[in-house]
Structures are given as structure tokens and as C-alpha cells.
Length: 458
Ligand SMILES: Cc1cc2nc3c(=O)[nH]c(=O)nc-3n(C[C@H](O)[C@H](O)[C@H](O)COP(=O)(O)OP(=O)(O)OC[C@H]3O[C@@H](n4cnc5c(N)ncnc54)[C@H](O)[C@@H]3O)c2cc1C
Image: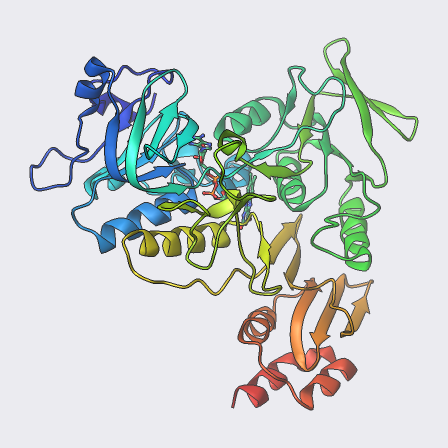
């Protein structure tokens, strides 16, 4: 059990009833209006001026921004998992052994949020009542708020395939998943990884580094299909194959069954394989089911405006659960990446304290290291109607550049095997710089991006 749980207020160390971590008891610091021990005794609710549902990057960034802008207001973060606030994107480094679990914690030592008088309460919110401005917790109890931020993130999707509940089948989403994977994924272990998307490829790297024998099964005809076009996706596939990884694209796992000591995995290409571990990375969905029937506007995620406000007053949303302003499309998207989560958290908090802070929207942007091959994607790399594009392919050296234009603006880009010009691409896209005559020069030679940037910035 983590050190901070020893400092519980009156609550039992029990996820059913929840547990709270707060800062020092100095009387000058903001306090929740009911101490949890009082609350427990009276079956009453905790009240905080600001309640944040979630304890991931969006939540932590929001809590700290709230504190910076409001020294007095009580801040309560709700954490469904039995761990201090942590970053999922650090999990692969736990698997490679680069860091320990503690290295994933968002604010190093257990005390740092407490020192800012930010309380972390271990409880899962299961219902929202916007009329009484309150939340109910799984197992009983609840809290009320003046301003609420929903930052519940996303959860991995389990496709409808028989046997995915068997022991030895895991997602790679939580610290608990990482422990289970580390237990099985030793040197020489046979592993099937279902899904070669962004998360799948990140995990792939970690599993290979542990010396596992890896087979990747991807339903689409290329790798990272939502981040790369077919040319680049197939170059990544070839790169992985050259590293000794078996990659089955256009293939689906049809069932997993318990064999003798191993799991038998059947595929729709007619083959089957006995493995020690199956890792499922077949996409994620925002954690918004607990809001069904509340009357909050939702689509893929919780819809928010440029102030991160939802359709219910005093309720904001941020991070992977939010469908926020998209810089590139001017619509709303769920980008499900950490920079978007922290941006959301920051802007939501500014608006929760009453500042009018408008968020310009997130840029769809991914940087991926697939066993040493770096790929990047920015903005509208799929291209826009009536737009133009240019491609530079060097298969032998695993280098690729693909640029898309809308009029004379760069609106999207893909790269493989190169890290130069990545900042320039982002700058050109985010600043919507008009390239004028430089667009034709780039269509002739995409390598001249830096020159174009310098010329057009002046
Ligand atoms: C293995 C892996 C690698 C990744 N690598 C990258 C990367 O390289 N780059 C990148 O940008 N992104 C990466 N990501 C994605 C990134 O981790 C997420 O985009 C980011 O965590 C989103 O932050 P969030 O705060 O919105 O949600 P989360 O981090 O998911 O946090 C949500 C929090 O809410 C809690 N919660 C959920 N429901 C409730 C409830 N009902 N009540 C109370 N608490 C609740 C959860 O327990 C959690 O604490 C990776 C993810 C994984 C799994």
C-alpha cells in the first residue's frame, strides 16, 4: 500500500468507502468543509469548491492551475485507481525497466499535491446530479461541488472475441496491467499483441525490449492505420519484420482458449498459435457511461466549447473523455494524447476560477518510436478536399515525408525516419502561415521546409 494511505483521515483503507489524502493540517490552508471522518460518521457528503473526477494528467494539471489562481478554494480530486496520480504514457518505461512504478507518478513524492492543499480521495464517481451539484461514489457516499471538472480519461476496448477474459490476457492501460504483463513477458516468452495502433506500437517496443517473441495481429491492412498512410504504415511493418517481429496485418484473432500451460490463439487466416500472454490494444473509449441520462451533451466524448465548458452549467470536461476544439478542423475531436489532456486541464481550470480563457484547439499530433524507427503525424495528414499533397519516399533507408496543403497553407504532415523539420512542420501548421510561392517550391522539394518557414515568417 502506498505511503500516503497511512495518512488517511477517518476513512478506512478501503476502496468501497474511499480514502482521502490531503495536505498538512495547518489552519491557514484551504480545508474541505467536512472532514472525511465527520462525513463518514454522519453518512454525509464532502463538499469542495472545486471537484475533479479523475487523477490523470488532465486532472493534476487542472488542480495545480486552480491552486495557482485561487489560493483559498478547496480542491478535491477523485481517483478511481488504487495508486497516486500517475501518467499512463510512462508505463512502457516501467516495462522496459527504465523506471520503477514510482517513476510514473505525476508529482514525484506522495506529499507534493497535499502541500498545495489539493486533496486526493480514492473513490469512483458513479452518478452526477447537476441539480444538487453532487456526485455519488461506488460503495456509498459522495461529494458536492461549486465547480466540477470531469477528467475521467478513457478505457481500452475489448473486442467481442471469445476468451479475452482468460487469465493471461491483458490490456496495457493501468499500473495493474503493467504488473501482470511484466510477470509473463520474460525473455523468450511467446506473446500475441492484438492491435498495431499508436498504443500497440508503443507497447510493442517495450515487449521486444524484454526479449519476448512477438506476433502482432492487426485487422487493418497496415500498421498504425489511424496515424500513418499505407505507404508509411507498410514501411513500419517492414522495419519490424527486419527486427524479427512477426506482423500479421489484415488478420483478426477469432478466439482464445486455455491450452496446456499456454493460451491457444486462433486467427482468421486459418492459423493458431500457443502463447504465454495476449496483450489487447484495440482502441479506447472515453469514460463517460456514468453520465448517461444526465442530459450532458455527448458524442464520441463529452462535448466542450473553447472554455472547456460542457452543456451543463458549472461542469467542465478535459482530457481523453472530452471532445474538445480541434485546431485543424475547427470542429470537436477526441485526440486521446497527453499534451491535449494537460492543455484541456489548464484551460478548464482557468475558466473554473472565473478567468475568460479561450482555448485555440488541440493539434492532432503523434510521435512514435517503433523499435527505433521514429514516425510523426500532424494535423490533417489525410489531406483536405481540393487540397494538394507531395510525397518523398526512400524505402531502402526507411525515410518518408508526406505533406498536405489547403490552398497555400500546410495543414498536415507525416514523416518517417527523420526528426529534422518536425518543429518547423508543427510551426507552419499551427501558425497557419501562408506559404505563397513557397508552396510550389515545397511541392517540388519537400526538403526545403526550413527555408520556407524562415522566408514566410518574415
Ligand atoms: C501505454 C500507453 C502509452 C501512451 N503513450 C503516450 C504517448 O507517448 N504520448 C501521448 O501523448 N499519450 C500517450 N498515451 C495516452 C495518454 O496516457 C493519455 O492521453 C492521457 O493519460 C490522458 O490523460 P487524462 O487525464 O485525460 O486521462 P487518464 O490518464 O486516463 O486519467 C483518468 C483518471 O480518471 C480516473 N477515473 C476514471 N473514471 C473515474 C471515475 N468514475 N471516478 C473517479 N476517477 C475516475 C482514472 O482512474 C484516472 O486516474 C499513452 C497511453 C498508454 C496507456
